[in-house]
Length: 336
Ligand SMILES: Nc1nc2c(ncn2[C@@H]2O[C@H](COP(=O)(O)OP(=O)(O)OP(=O)(O)O)[C@@H](O)[C@H]2O)c(=O)[nH]1
Ligand SMILES: C[S@@+](CC[C@H](N)C(=O)[O-])C[C@H]1O[C@@H](n2cnc3c(N)ncnc32)[C@H](O)[C@@H]1O
Ligand code: SF4
Ligand code: SF4
Image (cartoon, rainbow, N blue to C red; front, side, top):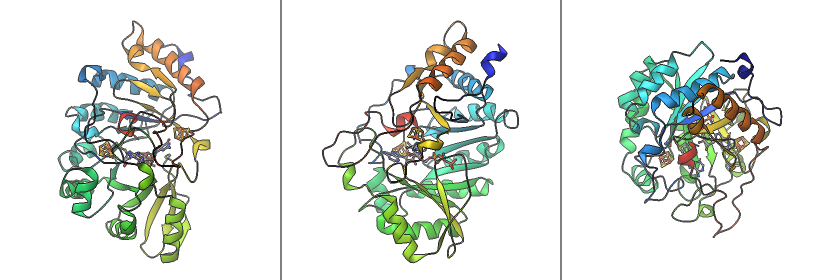
């Protein structure tokens, strides 16, 4: 490849892009009500990148200085052959790639935890919004809490560090948040709370369940001693240590505490569309590039274009009932 194409990825605001979130599928075995409607329309399989194509795309990013790759979805573990990609990318750890990880709903983790660890994955983020079986079934529209808990246990046994992601939802898991934090810290897992974002049509109103995390934090401060932590993962979470539980709690606050200034990431969907921002429409077609006559050159040009169009920040908000989502695209398309 031409050495000129190896320059680092720097956007128009001087931000270095070192983190790729790569979606392997938009399909999922759950239907979390804040993420997608029950009758979700999934993409035709023919539109999805092959694993070889996804690998080539990922390598193009590593060659341009991306050091962290997170596999996501949809549910990445429902793509049966995904472990082959994990193994192939795992071979780049220590050779450009510093971290290969994934975000999963955990339902299939018991099956894959050992293979993921063997391929070089060191930690996984598991989404878990409630420890109450009935509430889980209402929220995810599937009775799968036990499978998720087994998956988390299997991950720990396989030596994977687990971080739990919990979307904070008014009237759904609000009252359970302290108990979940205590449980997770008791098991040795970090937890991150996330504000719900207005992406994609869902059944019902997002504002009914929007819970600003500044208020949650104030409540937790009345209960426990929270001290800011310098811990950083390269993601948007900002952490505190909790003296009483002995664990770490993160906050992802796109609505009450914008973190776009430090943005270091882009996303690629399962069909090879690069979205320069989770909350924006700016898009570059990497599938066309990888399927072109000269994929190395075309991918390098496409990544340059992505840097040129990456916006400074998102502009979404949740302010009133009846509001259309900020973007029609669901989080399951861009992988969160
Ligand atoms: N608005 C916004 N939200 C993001 C961004 N990156 C991650 N999130 C949100 O944070 C959630 C959790 O992200 P994870 O998949 O755990 O990734 P991460 O926070 O980078 O993970 P760590 O590596 O553990 O820090 C995502 O699903 C999104 O909802 C971002 O760039 N912008
Ligand atoms: C889209 S999922 C993809 C990976 C996997 N299926 C999972 O649930 O972990 C990634 C993350 O996005 C979060 N998420 C989905 N829709 C969201 C929304 N509208 N607002 C905020 N977070 C959302 C989920 O809770 C999950 O932690
Ligand atoms: S949040 Fe993850 S597990 Fe839940 S429906 Fe969306 S993609 Fe599936
Ligand atoms: S919303 Fe966009 S600009 Fe802001 S941190 Fe996320 S991807 Fe970056």
